[in-house]
Each structure stands twice: as structure tokens, then as C-alpha cells.
Image (cartoon, rainbow, N blue to C red):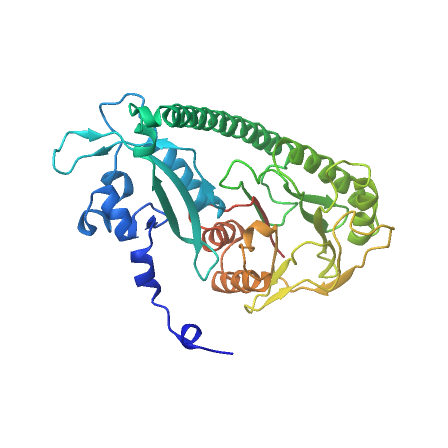
Length: 412
């Protein structure tokens, strides 16, 4: 069933301009891309004074107010949206605005802001939707006999909102301190970057941009008897100190198992059984590859982890995905894990990584894998160290990833 309303083409640009609420669109660099009529009217600015300019050049803090915090609070909220891709509702803010008619004079103003991400085709935050409701008159509604009770309640609301904001700020600082400790702990537990035997290798770790999703990833390289090494990467679900601790336990357990197990599948079997006794280890993903230079073969097994990539000397990319099983603890009963093998040629390059390198919000993993394959092909002549830097530059968002990333590259 159709009618004129459902068949009509909606002019969303026109809708945006006549929205009854104040809305502005900001780039990830906090430059005004657009603002609707209600926003400009309430802010007392023209389009020419706003569009294309940096937000805080247009609306700086009141220099005459030593306690002004509106610019700092708003900047933190907007950058959080860019970094995490998640909506952020702010507490009620006092944010004074300079008078256009009387330069140097500042008008006391109160606002209730909400900031939300708008994603581009690549899954990154392309714009931030900055919606504001002005509540200045509501807060200032004092003095009238008919509104005295309302004024008291509103003043209390504003006070509680500021207290809530201060509590949130203390929590963010606590998260930041925990993140620093967790990163230091992880750095101490991960092996230092070095070649394995006489083979060239490169390792990288990049923490998430925010204060949360960090410290669950690990990598390891183990020198074995004969011309063999084992390489592994893993990803613990969770964040902070607890995830870093679980990561250390699992990495150490897999390292020990790999030295005595008959191949990667058996090593992951042992790790899976051990993980059942570790709180927080459930749903961990891991992949291990045994490299044998005498037979020129790679034996591998994966516990729910993104597939390693084998970059051939001729430029083709092969994803090692023929021995993938669920993550640790995903099966109610123990089932032996699969193992597969593939040949390699001298000069090929093996790349292991965690999902932070390829996954994006609301994007199919195949898109991320294709992006990785293109980058590998483009840089196929690079040595492991240069290739590692190139992959991070090509694949991680410029504003920082929302998940931490581990990367291991071995020249075969």
C-alpha cells in the first residue's frame, strides 16, 4: 500500500534546517560542517561566523571566569565520541557566550548537550552530531513569587548535575590511572621486540585510544629445537588490570604448552583446559603457528581468532583459515582442536594480528580482511619492521582504534 506521503522524496537537508532543536554537525577535528537555524539563532551567530571554523575559536571559555570549565568538558565529550564511536550525554553545563553586539561582554548561559557519532562508509566516525538544549531561562527563573519553589528545585538540579559531572571526572581519572598501570604490566609481560634465531621478525602493540578496551591482547615467539619457531597471538575479552592479568596467565600457559605439545592444535587444547580454571578467560581467542624451515611448512590452529595472512613473494595473500574452532571455553565439553598445514616459499611473509587491526563497528569482517590484503600487497617488498609500520598506518583509524592491537610479522 502506498500513498503520497510514502512516495514523497524527503529533503533531509531542509528537514535539518527547520528542526525545532539546536543541532550542529562537527568534523572529528571539531570543525563546524553545518548548523541548523535554531542553533545559529540561539547561539547568536551567523553561518559565516560558524561554518568551517574550529568550535572553540567560535565559542571559547569566558576568560573572566577562573572556574569556567565548559570548553574542557565539551571537548572531552566530543573527542570521546570520535574515539569510541558511542553516544555521550553530558551533565548540565554553564558555558558563557560572548555578546556579538557588545564584544568583551559575556552572557551567562546554561546548556544540556548530547553528542552522537555519524559513521562514514569506512566505519569510522565521519561527523559528530552535537545537539544542545538551552536551559538558561529555566535556571534563572528566580525572584518571581509564582516560581520560587520551581527556582529552588531547578537550582538544586543544577547543583546535582555539577556534582555528577565531578564524580564522572574522578571516575575517568581513575580509569586513566588503571590504564597506565595495566599498560605497564602488559609491557612487562610481553617479550621485547627481537628476531627469533636468525630469522627476521617485527612485533607491535598499540593500545586503544580510550581508557577502557585495553590490555587483553598478547603475542609470543618461541625458539624451538631445529630450525623451528612457534608464533602466537591472542585476545582476552575484557579490559584493564583484570584483562592484563588474565592475558599474562594465558600467554605463559600457552608458551609452556607449546614447548612440549605435538603441534599447535594440542597446545591450544591444553590452553583451553587450563582456561576453564581462570576467571575471565572464557571467550578468549588465540591462534598459534609452528614454522618449520627445514620442511618449509606452516602448521596452525585457531581458537576463534581472525586468520593469519601469508604474503607470498609474488604478491598474493593467503588467509590461513582451514583450522578454525570456537574460542576458549565456548564448548561445554572438550573436543580436540583441528590443525592444518600449508607450504611456504623462501621470502614469503607471515602476519599474525588481533582484531583491532581489521575490525570496525558495523562492518563485516570480510571488508577488514580485504583491506588488510590490499595493504600487504601494496607493501610486499618491505622488510618486517617497515611492513609493520605501514600496516598500522594504513589500517588503524587516525584518531586511534577503539580496541587494542597486537601484530607479529615474520619473514620466512
